[in-house]
Length: 78
Image 1 (spheres, rainbow, N blue to C red):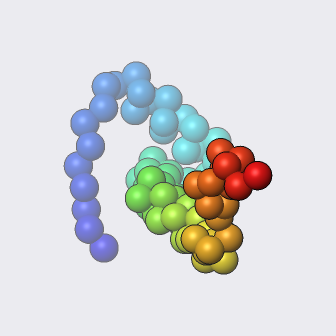
Image 2: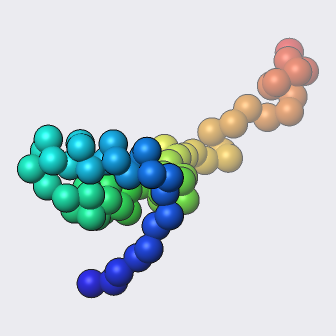
């Protein structure tokens, strides 16, 4: 387990100690839980990667042969 040092103002620390006491825990445990929760959330890169995978599945069935020809688009084959 790694130790970290965090600098915060006195009032924030006082309020954190009160909150920790109300929850029958320590400030260190609250910070540890917060960081663990933060680390377990999906990153922007992971979210975009998941979105890309979903889009790739959607377009997998796309085929250029399913498209209209240029003449059909412009209704030139009358």
